[in-house]
Image (cartoon, rainbow, N blue to C red; front, top):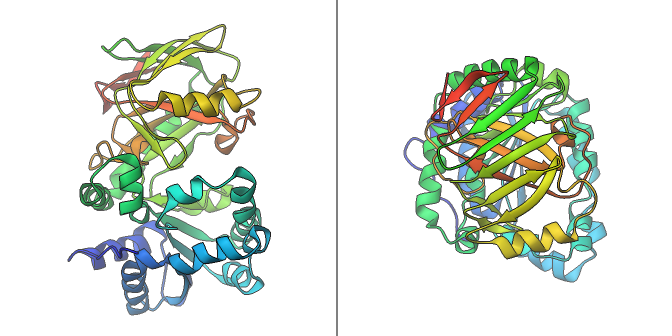
Length: 369
């Protein structure tokens, strides 16, 4: 287990999470959940919360004990939330989750049935959080671990430094840009994404409300059930018309996940409103394995997103938040208000591209207009 030591300005970052992200006030209740590798950060957040008069409870999961539990007990038992934890969520105003386990690639490699059983509590957790109008966030620094870095083939110190840089970004400015782009996407009907690298793809919208993940949970987020945000964050997503897509996308950013690893140099071509062919410079065999095993809907338009965090650049698992980066996804889009319930979802990332909404530029050379 490798603890991630907080930098000198960590108290300021913690105060940003408490005051700007979650809008917590004196006398409100906060639940902090942390794995062992993020405990120094969790302890610091608890301290800063108490200094602000916020009543704080810390839930702790030990990495080594977790893996022994996975090996020596039933997954169905581990996937059932304890009543006291549900009670804490029901009574809390705020919630902060420091990502874990530290070895997420190991959990992603578990047999699908076991993995699903271990996380079966998700539905109950989100139901309780929505009912209590919880304001919550996930701390992305917890993903940047040595185990994940080895799996992705990146430097863990650089990864952590990049996430911290994104955590210091102007969140209010990100929120303004994200809301403005969401308004354009809500009203738009036809989108076109282009780039000098050969990307030229057209998709359609159906008036669906975009999802904004700007690192801030406001009253509208709570009202609509979008009460968990990412920190650092900064993206607007919209579900596409599942019946129309034409053209091709050539990625210039890698996409990383604990299940597939890093996929680089992706090229997708669309014909007859579906993904007709694909290729990758790296990781293509992992994509093909999962894609071939998926069922109906895997090749249909899924979602589009635009990123706004200027401090992030080529950060694993935060690709969509890089400012001006456009994601085009296929497969599942129900989490963004779409109708495609495919168990498969993947996407390509394009930095420095152009996005037109009904013929008018919204993103030009990666800059938000």
